[in-house]
Image 1 (tube, rainbow, N blue to C red):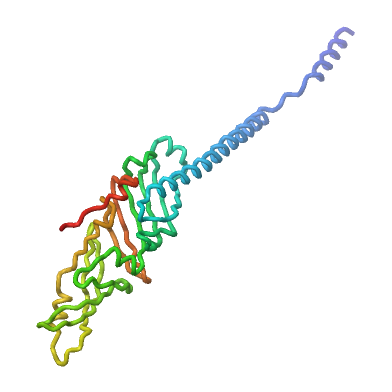
Image 2 (cartoon, rainbow, N blue to C red):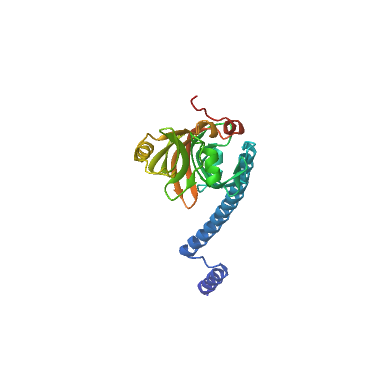
Length: 270
């Protein structure tokens, strides 16, 4: 009788204890908690990254606009490349910063498609940027402001891949006008104007002017220095003439993007 009573008590006690969860279910619960926590942390990091990126890009744009020389105007837009701007800021240097402007003007002349890609940009803009690669498109008036041709200061016209200009010279004491088609080739802070063809525009009876044409076309390239119109340390690395625009590729290394540096131009030989 006693044995039966004790057995009933043990059964009742066992019934009052909660059932233990299987080990697999406990692991799944812990995993869900960890995933949720990770999502919260990562989501917060992405939010902080987005906010920081926006603030950093606005700050760089404001600093760039403030550094423009008095003869340069334009609204600057900034894009900071890379996945984590926060880490770049903590390192004291941004990997690549791209500046663009849709309304830039130089000496009140519109400059189109301005794009500046700067690599290794310090937070302190008084320090040097590692490398700069820039492009800018000039229409015909803007190109003529940049390039001053010798002679009677003829104006360039833009064709596809080439430029043209008209000038005059004296041939056996007779004033003769001519038209030249030429190519533009960059050479550091100089632009080489290389004649490809020429034609005489002055009609002088039966006078043979072939020697004059050969002299014009066969002459050495005309070297045009542009150092005085570029910030010191900036060189022209490429020129493409197309669709009524001359697009220049510019480059510089160890360049300080400050107002003083932008205002300090190079020198042309006397």
